[in-house]
Each structure stands twice: as structure tokens, then as C-alpha cells.
Image (tube, rainbow, N blue to C red; front, side, top):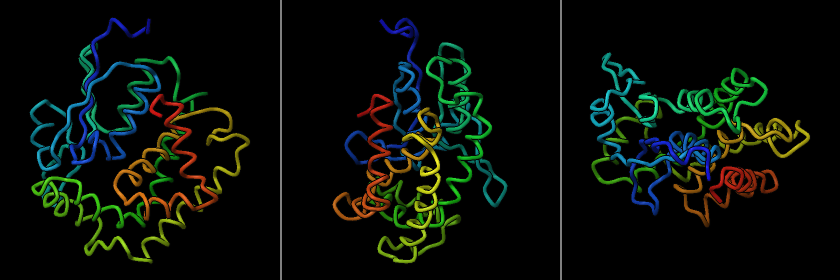
Length: 246
């Protein structure tokens, strides 16, 4: 029997899509992987992209983004823990909460949370410059209303046009993963921290999962999978297995 078998399931709010199983968004995937790794019971509530702000505001979630006009915007993931009454926004803060509240099977081993927070920012700086190929395909898996809202919301940060076949964007993405590959090459094991699994590997895997779910698997995901000797498909498979999601 699980040590958490008598507790109420936590509630994770995530983005709805037309994909089987819904999930595709990398940020909500991060706490999902951690919950599964720690064997914490949880349920998912799926929210239309265009309804996220209203839905999250209605449950009292903290706004995470400020528009240019100064208005606040609520995002997902949001986690509700009925066992403690906590309501947490932002994937990194959710994971930090889970680590402190449910410390078994740590994902910030050896007091590594400050370093992994820095790793999160560094990794994002590698892949964001080449993110355009995924954005157009993301619109294709959302409802019409959400796709329109997504384009309006994201084009402010990543200017249009979004061309999934733009060689310049693919080269930027490959360049980022080449750097990440160099990081992995400096460890003695298969994880960022050598033989020790951590949230750093989950961060990498959840973005790979997003690419695999959103891009065309036989073409664009196959392209990413081929980089660095197949490293990225293997990282995703290894992390999914470690987190009981294989």
C-alpha cells in the first residue's frame, strides 16, 4: 500500500487539446512528472487555452504574467492540494512545494534546488530562440477559439510569422540542443547529475515531450530525435521510465 493511499488526490490544472490524452504543454508536464515520480495521487482538470485566465482567477490562483497594458494574467499549471489547502501557480514553485511537503524520493537531491533553478533558466535560453516551429503546430491541436487566442497571446513574445519549415529556426533549435548535449557529456552517468536523477532531467524531458506531442512524429520529431546520436529520444524515454510514465 502506498504511503499516500489515504490522502485526497491533488488537483493539477492543465491545457486541453485535441490530442489523445490531451497533454502537450511542457510546463504543466513538469509537475505531472514529479507527482508520478513521487507516487502522489492526483487528478487533472483540463482547461481550454482561451479560458485559462478566467478559470484560474475564479479559483483564486495567483496571476503570473503582466500584459503591456498592466493587466494581470493567470496561467497554468496550477496545483491545488486539498490536504493542506495550498494553491500554487508556476511549475517551478509547484515542484518546490511538492519537494518540501512530500520529501520522499527527492527531485532536488543534495540541496540542489538553487542550482536547478539556475539550470532551468539556462536551458530555456537555449531552446526559446528556436521555438517557432512548435507554435504553429500548437495552434493546430487547439480548438478554433483557443488557437486564435494562442496566436494573439504568443505573437507578442514570438513575432509572426511562424513557419514550421524555417531553416533558420531549426538551426537555432539544433544549436541549443548541441549545447545541452555538451552539458550531458560532462557527467559520468545518464543524468545531468551523473547517476543521480533530478528535476533538471525532468525539465529537459518535458520540453522534448512537447516537441514529440506537437510536431509531426515521422518528420519533425524524427529530426530532433536524430540529433546528437539519438540522445534526446533516449533522454525522454529514460525520464518517462524513471517517473513511471513509460
